Amino acid sequence: MEANVNLALRKLGVNFCLKDQQRETLESLYEGNDCISVLPTGYGKSLIFQMLPWVLKAENVSRMVIVICPLTAIMQDQVMSLCKKGIKAYYINIQGTGICCVKRSGEESGSDSDDLVQPEIVSIVLGEDFRPKFQQIGELTALFPNAAHLAVTATATPSSIAFLSKTLQYSKPVVITVNPDRPNLYLEIKTRLPNIHKYDKYDDIIQPLTQELKDLGDRYPVTIVYVESLEALGYFYQYINYELKDDQYIGDPIPENRIFGQYHKDYTTAMKLHIVTELKKEKPKLRLILATVALGMGLDAPGIVRIVHCRPPTTLEKYFQEIGRAGRRGQKAIATMYINNNDLAKHRKGLSEAMVKYCKGNHGCFRLQLLQYFGFDKAIFNGPKDECCSFCRSQNSELE
Ligand SMILES: [Zn+2]
Image (cartoon, rainbow, N blue to C red; front, side, top):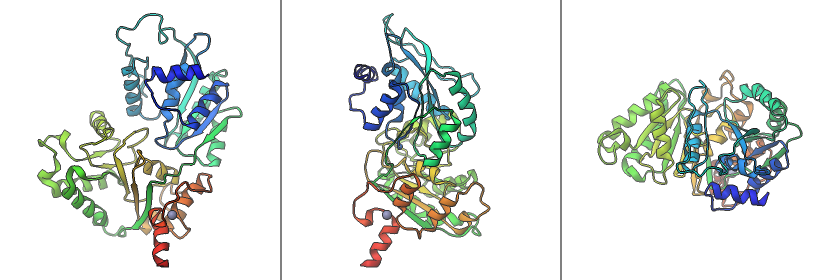
């Protein structure tokens, strides 16, 4: 396998070492096992399936890897970057119309990428709102009984791993997990005004963020603010727009130079692409993004150092995935979640008990609670209490 791994790294132009669990995943697939890998955001899940055509190459037959991914923007992005490296990649969108094919220019015939292809490997990337479709993916598993199958996800509890395995019809999968703790991420929960305030319930949140954006401009820590609805997003957007006026541009007053932006599912594909492209830069012009839940999957945005939730997501899985966008380079980052009692009301659709318990804030360290939820009993974090979470910080100040 080693020679194949090296070949894959060379083909992809990767010059760093594989991480342990990336290697373990490749090994178990190489040995023909089905595999479920729970690898945190930023760990390098895509690299695994990008490497598979070469890692699984046998007797000079290249393999085809089928990747199932729930977001068109991510597929586009992945296919484009593979094509730039001269690797044959295609995508089919949900309408079945958007097939992309780019052939390497000046490609010598008889090269590896020419002698495709037997569809033998099926790789599956899972994301939120994808779970209802599981049954159908199980059918696909059955279609390729001789292929090794891989499911990669950033977050899964022990019971959801069992559920995954059963629904995807995997046989005795190898389960590979990484402790998902993010020691560089400070977790905090704050209360906000009750919902009887129509929009000004958000003013506690938006005022300081906007003032700071005005003061710091292009030095503003890159922040994603998750808002609960398009309506709320509109309010935030107008508020910042009004407050910043001419200060909202770096350089000429054109949309591309704006330091804040919005991202939601009804936004145009071109504008979504602009946001994603901008966020992938080390130093994006775009410093604050107002988003509904749609932003983030598979996005490698190195500059993001702050995530603000205006109200809790419904599940800890979603929450953990969303805060996982911050501090991707190991730099200090902060995740702030605002709550009020209405957010935790029983009738809120989809709200999980675990989320409510977490938000109540009296069950100890937030970091540890999250980790325990995902089946780990120890944190990687070992810094001062003040830098762990708002619960630990409050305990600490009581002692002083
Ligand atoms: Zn803590």
